[in-house]
Length: 212
Image (tube, rainbow, N blue to C red; front, top):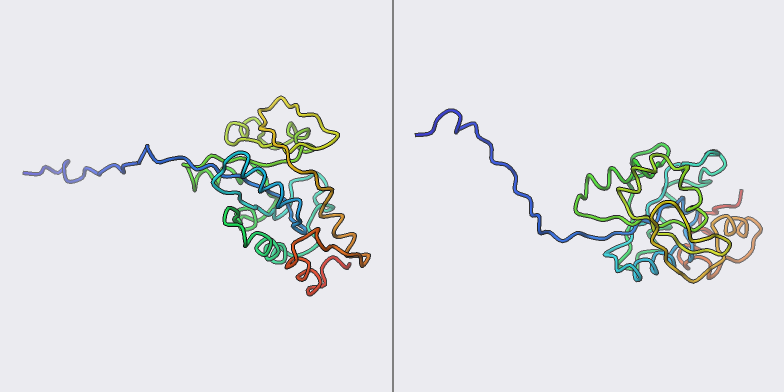
């Protein structure tokens, strides 16, 4: 016969501890606009580190000191559409809107906390340029962050491969392309063909982006 205590006993959830961990890269930024350099870096990191996937994670507002200067000049919707166009033919790439949906300044620490809460069986590899490695000591909660993710440094000319934090260094083809350069070329009426995917180029022209 069941006692009252037996009736109130709850069954504890059973977790599958043998579930294989996923290894996922994260490429964050304003993507204002996304360009071929972003895609090359993501593909090389995916291949060289044998990842399951690379997430493109657009910022809402970048966490720089001069936020007003770095604030994207176009809407989040436009940036998201261009990312979708750029990655749609690569099954290993995906879009993540964690920062966009959360709103406010996009601090990496807060983003990773959310991602790990949603996906506890995933190891994250956060991709940054060699120039950003030098600035890691200034990142919010960096000492906690380095214990939560793996930092992947993309080698760049003029920056040494050294840091007091653990960095996985990856060599990629060096493409002298930047979003600011593309915006400047558009404003001056110069070609951006082969600097961005064809669909992105057409989208920029059709929407009249970066002309102001």
